[in-house]
Every structure is written in C-alpha cells, then in structure tokens.
Image (cartoon, rainbow, N blue to C red; front, top):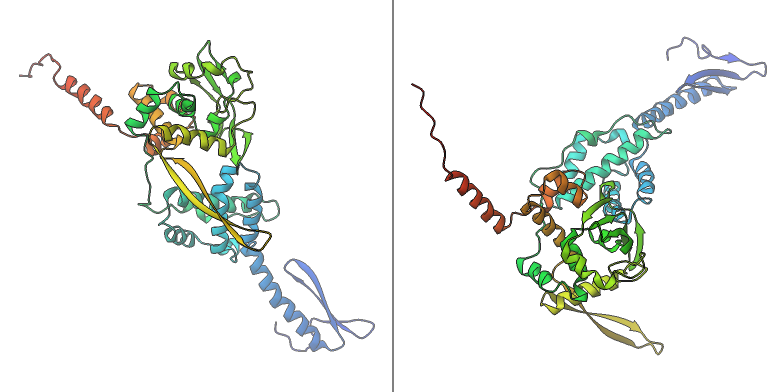
Amino acid sequence: MSRRKITDGLHQRADGRWERKEIINEKPRWFSSMDPAKVWEKRDAAVAAGVEEKEKQDAGPLFKEVAEVYKGKVMEMKHGTQRSYLPAIARAKKQFGELHMREIEPYMISEYLESISSMARTTVSNQKSVLNAIFQTWIKSPIWHGDYNPSKIVSIPRGLKHTKREPPTDDQVKIVKDHYLDADALPAVVFLCTGERRGEACGIQLKDIDFDKKIIHIRNAVEHIGDRPHVTTTKTPAGVRQVPLLKMLEEALQPLKNLPGGTYILGGEKEPLTTSKYNRQWANFWRKYGYATELCYSSKTRLSNGKTKEYIHKEWRADVCAHQFRHEYVCMLAEAEVPEAIAIQIVGHANAKMIHEVYMSLKPKMVDSTRSKLDALIFSPTTPTKTPT
C-alpha cells in the first residue's frame, strides 16, 4: 500500500496512539500503537495471515475430518456394510487425509484407484463408493457447504480381477437331493430350495411359511457379529419378498411343522442359530458324504505355576459353502424358464445386473438344452418362399 507519509491512513486518538481500522476477510480489524510504523507492521502481518486463512477456507476442511463424520454414519449401518466400508475409509484417510477437500483433484483419485487395481473388483468399486460418499458428506453439510466432488467423474480401472462365483458341483447337488430327509441336511435343503442368503435362511421362522399356499415370506435376516446372532432387516429392501415352498423342503420340514410359530427352522429353537452351531451343523452334513476337511490348530495358555501348556483344537470345515446354492437356485430358475422379471424378485435383487454378472453360470446341461432347441429350429420344416421375378 503506497503512502507519502507514514501517518497517511492512520487516525491519532486523544491518548496519542495511532490507529487504523481495516476490513480483512470480511471482518473489521483494528491496529494501534504509539509508533505509526508498528501500526503498519501489525496491519501487514494481519493481511498476510488473512490471505493464508482465506486460502485454507477456500480449500475446505481436511479430508480426514470429513471422513470421520462419514465413518460415524457407517457405524450406524448393518454390520456387513461396516466390514466392507470401514477398511475403505481407513485406506482413503491414509491416502488423502492431510489434504483439504478442494485440493483433491480427479486425476489423484484416478491414480489412487489404479494403484489398488491388484485388489478384487468389488474392493476397488467399494473404495470409489466410499470416496464418493465422503465428498457427498462434505457437500450436504450445513457447516462446510461443499460444492465439489471429483470422484463422480472418475471411472474404476478396466480389467480388474473379477471371479465369477460358481454353483456347487452336480455331485454335491445330488447328495442334497438324495439325503434331503437327513436331519443334518435341512440347511442345505433350505438353500437349494429357496436360494436364500445365509442370514435370510437363518431368519425364517415357521410363522413365515404358509404351508397351505406353499409360500415362504422373507421378512427378516440374522446378522452374526462374532458368534452371536442379531435379528435385523434383509440386506436390501428388495430382500423382503415371497418365494415358493418347494415340495422337497416341505417334506424336510414335516418334523418341525407342529412346533410354535416363533421356531426358527434352522436350529429348531426359539432363538436363531449362533455362528458356531450353524458351522457345526453345516460341516456335520458334508462330513458324512466326503465334502469336509479336518482342521487342526494350536493355542497356548500360561498356567499359574508359570509354565505354558499347548492345546490342540480340531474342527471340521465343509468344502462347499451355503452361498454356492444361491447360484444353483439362479441356474434352476433359468432352466425352468422362469421370466427374468419374476426371477429377480424371487432372489431378492433390485435388478438383473447381479444375476448376470455374479450368480448366473452356464451349466453343461443348459448348453445341451440350447443345442437341442436350436437344432429343432434349424431342421424344422419350412414353407419355401417364392423368389421374386
């Protein structure tokens, strides 16, 4: 600021002190001293600090501050969602935590997603979703008033690792069909005949089954946190639905049919199965038919005399998981030529994307059936058309 005299722009008060009032960053500031030069020193320092403060304000809050607010929202979500999103939040804070929100540019997010492209496609997709959610938290905040979301214009890298989930083998399906009246087979029969997610199957009570109309109402799910079961809602709103009660499952449920309506069909008790009880029942069935592996592991404990004692633990782990039967169920819907719109609702998806990209597997007999139908079409008699003259 140019001035001819050092007192230009200053006002001398009655007590002899020199003073200057100035608006800095839309706030009035006063600077005073007996020495006019000191007034200007204070004023120039405040202007410089104001420029730095304005730049910080324009850059927005630190990314880690917004991420913590979003983390609080995630902590109120279902436990399964927390398991997916909390590690993604931690990774995002490690990468961008010390940057201000407006300092993060699209190319930075793109480079970061490329750097984790060795991870599974779902992991990278979840990471982008979390970044987007953190920026949306900033935008929706009545305190921060964010107006910039670089993650929206970034695409996840191409060619990410994506493993298609496979249904159980034909032999595993045959075992369930051949032994569906075995008491230990009930979980496998439920999964084969309903295509439910594990939590949904564990949440079915007898009162949810209409044996007259042959319909199962899926209303709740069981979420396991550690060993303890917690009754909660289905994974998505589309999870609340009706599925047909197939004859095989109806027959397998006969021993439970006269129990109280609040009985959970998996476990046969008024409380849902714990994780450990479910795993034991599942492994017991598959162990009978050669599809389980014995695992051994050790643990050590210190005794009161100071010595250490080692314990050997053994348990059986099934070689096939329940979710594979969800894939089998989707394949059966396709083989039965159930219209896609109905199949989507039966398996509890909002659209056909998951069925096409994740669950649907082209089984050999489906290829054989297609071949037969196409052969019949090709060799069917046709009426020759006249060639125009």
